[in-house]
Image (tube, helix red, strand yellow):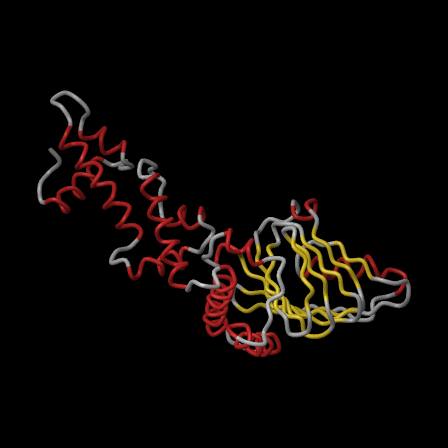
Length: 305
């Protein structure tokens, strides 16, 4: 846990700016006013989540393109306004954030928070790839204040407040499992906000279709793998496999099945001269002819023609 308190007047801007940037992400922090400044920030890890609580006097916090270029990992953050108010800007939208409101923001794009008075906030940060929601959905949600007077937000607010106060009290195995559940809750929150008339199942079905289309367009790439697919769609490998639990196959088996289907189709219609079995197999992503022959025989009961 990192805590800063009673920032020295002579170095208050540099001291506080460094503390916030090291704890969250690189940002420019400018206290509002010339008087004494007080700020505190504390952080804990909960599996893949970083849970931070910040309390400070009036200030403006900005994440600029130059600061974004210094960051190596794409993160999504969910902020919970505990006290005070803020004006939040991202993706060309401005939101007035009140006590109890939630905000979602993407650290790979510029944003700012303007706190006109003393405030307190919880910040939950996680790798964007773990959310398993399209970037377009995240962009629709940023720049908005999400009220917690009803619906899913009303259920989420007390849970997040309790989690922030007890994040350091769980053994590692429990923390990892709890963090995975929180990631799913955040994904649900984003999906609900981005598709008010839809469901989480609709979003997952859409993502499965996108993954299937990606596989079909990249069958010839011998490096096509669950890891590459997950990275391309900015989700975790674990979440990718969970998406396909209801599809009756695994991602790896689907890739091989589709490759075999294309090979079988091409071999069935080829002429007497070209191409060779090995050439067809290689064209559809099989790098080992012996492995291709075994897989073909297992699928169709005969050797490649």
